[in-house]
Image 1: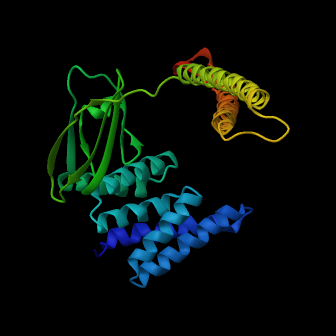
Image 2: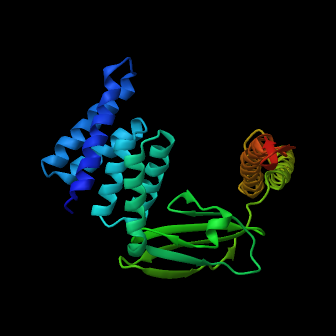
Amino acid sequence: MRLSAAAFAILVASLAAGTSRADGNVSEASKRADALYTRGVQLREAGKLDEACASFRESEALERSLGALLNIAECDVRTGRFASARRNFLEAAAAARSSNDAVRADYAAKRAADLEARLPRVRLKIPSEVTVSSLTIDGIAIGDAERHTVMPIDPGRHYLEAKAAGDLVSNAFVDIPGEPGVTDVELAFVKVKRPEPAQNRGRTQRVIGIVGTSVGAVAIGASVVLGLVARKEYKDAVAAKCDASGCPRSAEHDFDAAHTKTTLGTIFFIGGAALGVGGVVLYLTAPSAPRTTVSASARGVFLEASW
């Protein structure tokens, strides 16, 4: 998009205003912002508009500048982002008026007015029974009053997220056409399940830990009993069936039974020890109930919790 003679004159004046800051005692950020601004102008005059726009945005991010803001607005116009351009022109007009710069204030206000007829807009349809607590478009908060207006918006895909009382949430991608007009967007809310409170999770984990430790203790006790029984059966078999010459084949059955009990006792002991240790770990690592405090300020009432 070619700039008109008036627009070009405004931007030349913006360049002079932007670079004059570096003549005095200024911070490194200001010097960097001025350098980026000057580079943006040079790139724009060389026809490298995309690089120029990027340089203007970097300059504005480092330090607020009326000249950079006007150039960014012109960049938005060139790329068809008319809503952003209008917003930047209005912001530039307000900044120019506050610094008694009538020329640039009038220019920016007129450019914003000229864009009105070219704006795509969006109208949000919120169910009457839903009380919205927060709403963002592309991560930018939309105030309560603005939600109920027909809002200017840039064309393209936008991400909308809304939260409402009763754990309701609505999120969706919205595609806005490039031509002027109004796109209606109906917000569909769904209830989000709250995560289980920490105190409930901790209580459940502690109960599991206690049960595991108890079962482990019983298993260890059973292993001890099996070991004692196996030892007694083995001694009884030796005393009843064996002599100095040895043990008969009939005693092997009693020995095998005692050995089986010994093996079971070992298994019970290992399993019981594992359950016991696991139960103790679960109990000790269970989250404790949060300590909740309530505080109030001019912005509302807040809950604070710590674990």
